[in-house]
View (tube, rainbow, N blue to C red):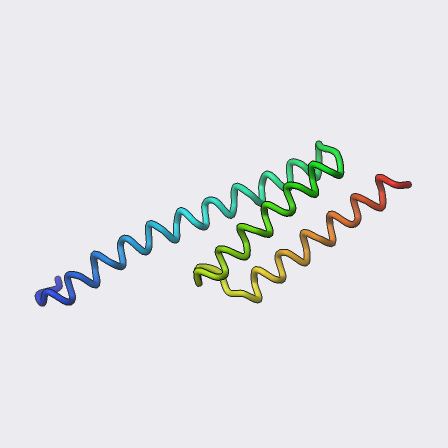
Length: 92
């Protein structure tokens, strides 16, 4: 148990930060699931809109330090690859 005032404050701040980071990750996972749904059941334009939303949230999450920037870049790249594949199969 923390005894000093500064240690108690650090605990309070850590709990707030932890809750905020949990919310950010939950928001990110929801956006990625939405993208997956649009990829499976919607048109290319809807999937593209979901991709843009997911990228926006990935970038924001990485800029806050919740996710590493390279992890966000890798996820965006893989999502874009899947989106392009859907577009190619929609054309054919």
